[in-house]
Image (cartoon, rainbow, N blue to C red; front, side, top):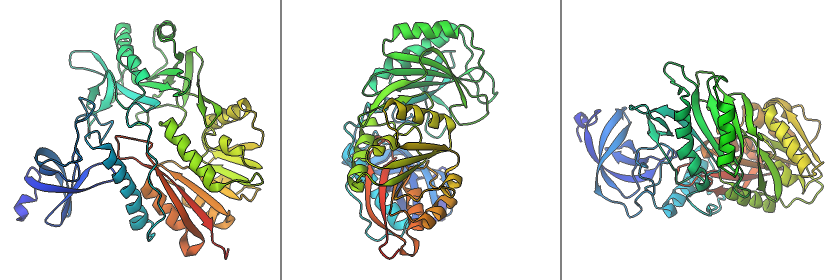
Length: 457
């Protein structure tokens, strides 16, 4: 190769030998790394260089010279455009293999663990039709038609959808038909460039076991003429729809939901079963999108901890008590820590609904509450957001020295970083890691890591 070929716009031939944790295929060209979306390990591809740096580049697939044995036809006709999924073109068995490898690589390269004890990935019951929640940006076509869907990969160009193969299929009629009602109402659609208009997102949610649904419009302003009447009409049209809400987000932000939600018709939550318990879930509540696989991972956690009923447990980043409440049935007392007060309000209600009395919830930043706890926990459960734990959380845990720590993560790079800090100087030993496929057809992987305090501490 000559350096003249390493320029933006040049087309090179590349063999794809790996998949990145963002879902792109990875190949090497003269010792330089090239990331290429929509490719599979085993593809030999013609790739146009798009963003070129001295040691790496991002490219665009222009043609396939040789096709990988693990490449399949996507279920969705817009899979090559839509940014909702990255891996519909990849055989599901290979998706699982890639995710398993993603966990191994993160723990070895970032965490510094040699031969980490990683179990085989928990396989989803179905690789399609699993999502219990979807939020779609709303836009307008060139001909003035209201659209809803996901953004085109790498852009804010909307790909209009009337159904989505990864969401629960019972939500598809709402996705297709609510847009038409918005059109008939003449409600102005939000323009993110001008920061004008009203309708920003369409939110859909379903209880996988109960079938109860919620419909939420995320708006720039509360003033939406005729919305109460329309909400009642939606309730009448869809028997499984139990609530219609408005959520206001008037900020210039990529965040979907604002801080305030108003119920227009029905109730402000749906009911769902999880691990044998009853839960209330609101439109903007965090709840794992794959209910059944989340239950399977919980069963692994329960079996591994083998709780005897006398333990004191702390559940950091507890949300609405999704893991707190099932574990409460197996310990003496459990304390849930959560920053969002609305989530704690729901957690308390969920505890009361299930007659669980040995649980306490505290509102505030985990890094502050944890260091002021008046209890010494036997077990700490961590389930932080994608950014991982704050530095003070790691430092406090190393001082508290609970005998066991369970760390549940949706981003294995931050998991590996935090495990390395917790295990520094041999304070904790990594005893087991259980990956789980919560997000089929995407590059995301969940994992639960188990740490035990070293015997000499």
